[in-house]
Length: 370
Image (cartoon, rainbow, N blue to C red; front, top):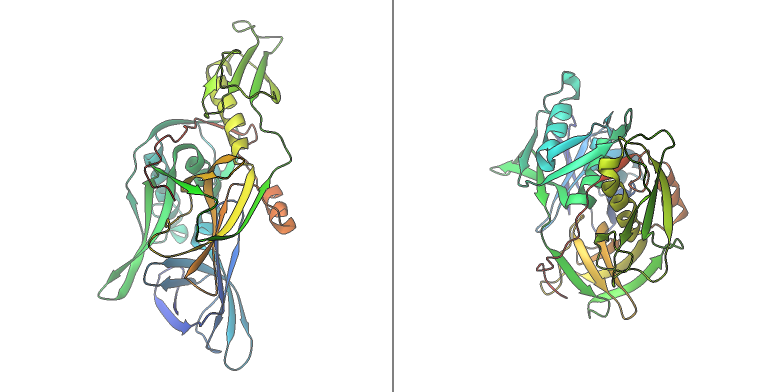
């Protein structure tokens, strides 16, 4: 496998190298993961922060060099972060209503292409917006959010994903294209699929929140009633206490609301209840042949086991020593202690009250059944 290295600011070519099977490529939507490559070269004209690009037959990887360590006179160990870590820049969280994909494009463009700070601009970046979704993002006042976390929240809420594509002219790298796409279909995967191995399912010990109650503040003048919302087993929200699709065991959370909060209580309840549906971790290894689903980060998946069906999202992909197999992670729950610490260090979590997001249930599973 060939690795090509470029200057981060200009994308000018700097050097190249090769790896055999001594690599570990990790992509993750939930926590920051590091990839590693043992390059068959000891002298590389590269620096921390430079760009590494892999162009394989059916696979692109763009990484940011985090560490360089010469192992011996023949090999160098390189660790990288996924290119999405570029978007860890923090911005003021502003409430928005309208085309969510266009809003995301504007955020990226204003911070990395058309910023008033010219040193922050990366002139080789282009954006191709292939999505258009109307929606609402409500943020509390005076909140800061990283652009990467905003992307994560929008992905879970509206199925809008960020993909990267390296653009070439006559074999020469020209730039990096950011593609804003919408996932409109989901995939059904059965746990007994022949080519699935190493299946491990971990559910959070926390019970799914299926009822949210709002109590009025004592100084409210317009809205004085108690308001509740219920999560149904099909993912929809209801106010009907006798609905046949209610969860049998009630697990509720309560909040206080003001007169100004009242118009968006349903959005807050929806976010609170639906975010907990991803509180699991399903990992498995799948063979990358043509008869199996080709999964990408952010894809919606209905994972079917004998005892339970999980509505989930692809949150992790790993390629360890081979491109013939992919280690897949579904859901947001993390088992490793280091990953749990990373989650605790995130400044904004979708389960907190910092943001309320409209979230739709995916009913179109025409992406295939496996």
